[in-house]
Length: 70
Image 1 (spheres, helix red, strand yellow):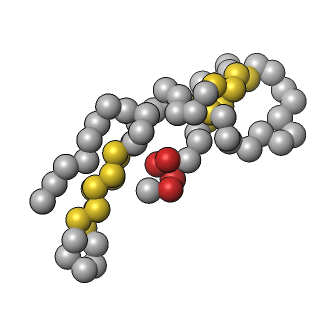
Image 2 (cartoon, one colour; image 1 turned 45 degrees about the vertical axis):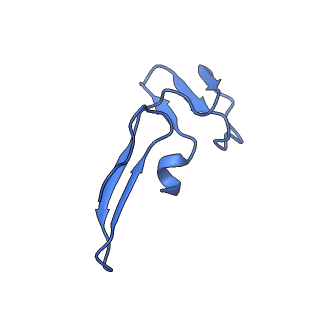
């Protein structure tokens, strides 16, 4: 879940978009743009079955999804 919530970057071979909070020490080459977190750098979700028989459902804050289940 931490990886889903973490700041991200998006690279399209021409430019780099970085969410606030992502470590950019040493980045001096343009073009890059820092955007507010959470940005629109993609959306992730997770559904997993744990060893204890429970389900783990989690939705990214960047999207408009909602994790629901029984």
